[in-house]
Length: 243
Image 1: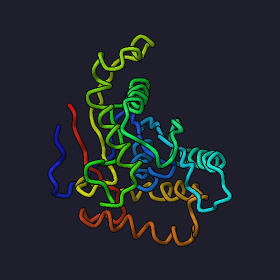
Image 2 (image 1 turned 45 degrees about the vertical axis):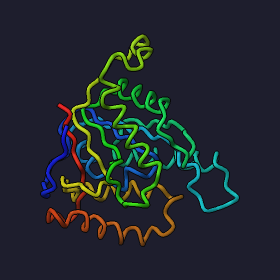
Image 3 (image 1 turned 135 degrees about the vertical axis):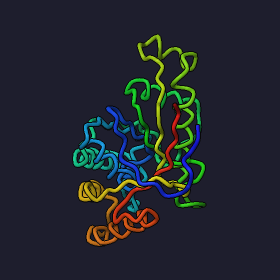
């Protein structure tokens, strides 16, 4: 397993039948990889999304309850997924901000990897997180546990053998596309899908204090990400090839 060299490389979205994205909160993929996933879907991929939490602490209103916030954010995530064409969204409903690197969480991720059998998985870069120093802890935990679940746990039959007895067979993921990565060097042109990426982000109304400002800032953000590869609008990844 090795990451690409850091020279900027323009790549196409994964040309595979099945893709899985593993994230921490309902609006994570919109920030980092929704444009790439939308292009993959347009090319025929089936994309499924696994969210470790429902973002139930994502409110500045002390009068809100975690139950209400979580329910609201789940509904927003489903609307966003519909804009992108994502086939399925599953919420593990762990408490927001309280994720830990546990065997139980690893077992849950292995279960869904074996059930969905993706060729490619998208998740956070836990080793070189963007932003550095202040990356959300849930992001780092999800990325680390996802990588541990992918390799070698989901692949090897003696890991969580009770899943095999339940009919879930071992599965080997071919590639991992790490987003929110400070060492990313693979760039995807998201100009064809940027409008859907933006619409999906705006579907998270509870997390959007000023929709007009977001519409102005997100093209600037995508241009900044794409600048090393001379792309007008881009998303960036560190790609791990596991074959």
